[in-house]
Length: 603
Image (cartoon, rainbow, N blue to C red; front, side, top):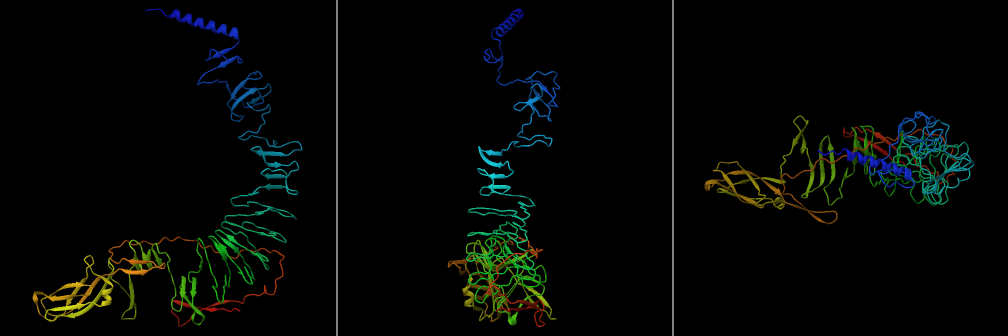
């Protein structure tokens, strides 16, 4: 075996001497490179490795420990979380983080641990400016005023806090006050705008703007725009309370005195202990207008009188329109009362409601309740009724294929009759999987044969063909060889005795035939054919019903406000006469209903 030890040792010795010569000649060291940078004493070069400095735990940046007698500029990696993990160097007095100062008091991006005496700001008579994109966004003036907004410069004279922009100040809170302004003798909050809204309050569930004052709770003054505007998602845009005066008073020469607009709650809400909650008077326009996108346009509440009274001589007394919710909602919290009662030409000034109460009660001279569905392109019915899983569609079209229905439901078709003892009994109708007409009659054989002609009115409305044959049933009422039916058509059929018999026996008969398709003229003038040749046609299930919670709006606690108002002219002082409803139980009325007297006293 060849001895290779000597050559290897020779190579190592040669490399070592070469390295010493390089250090001596150039005073540079290169690790990982044979050409160290000329400006570096030590040049480390590696594609995937770095320099690892000593790791120590420094618990106090003001002391050298744990390093003993560190030289100025000594670099270490600090492992202590409390003082801050990272690179530190010794500046002869303290450990300084890389990029920091000798006292390490810079504000870091992740926050600082302070003792309570530190601050962010200036100690000279200069403002503190906060910028983004090198433009002032916020300025804390040397006199203590604060300005926020695009290109913020100086605060408005007299303001402690000024904000400039489209929405200059926005305050948000979960359940408190989004913005609170308080003043002993001046204005708690003021909003100024050249073209937009000076001050706007918005709340999801409570009052958007609340004002308390000895003179004006909330004052809106404008030359040509809106003096005060309240907007709320689900609460009150503007709310006014008064013990004896006006909760909200609006006056305008040519515009709207008071305007309420709400997306899902009350546009205007007025309550009064002894006067009018909302009073509207107009010579030519509308006294009161309530508009709401999805909530209440107007709400009237009364403890003993009428919540809302509407009267008209030649137009609608009351009209309710909604774009996305219920146009008019009537509800009674007493289950023995009626949610909505309607009457046309009430007899003797009375209208009828159920004694046990109902959601809707209707009474009219010819029609008590009227329902119509306007859709001509989808399944639609004039009425729908449901009680604990039993439901019925009434008066409409069932789609696929189109079939006209008078009643469609999952219960039975029944009638009520009187029994021998005068008690009421139920009888139910026969129902089939097809739409059928049925007729009955009697006949008699003459020399073993008889021709039965069907009533032409019946024939006109039945369909007899190969797919829809007519069924004839004969019951003999005399002695013969038996009979059979032949020559069936929509116009009639023949009955013949078996075995060429010639008897003159009498009989009764019944026929069952498919109802003929019917033609209907729709509201838009189109013609639709009702397909009556069905068998076990698929049926619709119950309609989807959503339960809307009825918010019981009670008269809320009012606060006294001395609000200066204009004197009303004589026309404005006209008060509507009292309108009362007197409940009277008539002895002669149906025991299930009660008569309510309508007493309309008006000018």
